[in-house]
Image (cartoon, rainbow, N blue to C red):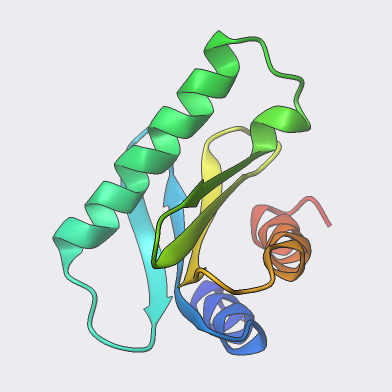
Length: 120
């Protein structure tokens, strides 16, 4: 299964999911994304910047590796979940409607990220 297939499968498995993106937080670059409708590069770039800042903040405050591997940003309209791989550069971003099941997204996203990063 390709990276693109894994991202699309994850997005399809999560109700109300709008975007699943895989990126590199150090390089601040989204490498591949799956989305239901067109998402401008500027939006993907802002998601990547937000992920990098979330993980940098967790590192600065001395969060445990488990705490530093997840970040959730909630707005009035959506939830953005950032999951960081063990190598601490690869990450997934999951953007869904606000009322989505965050636990399901974290569980499924973590599993997908482990497969992508070769930890499984």
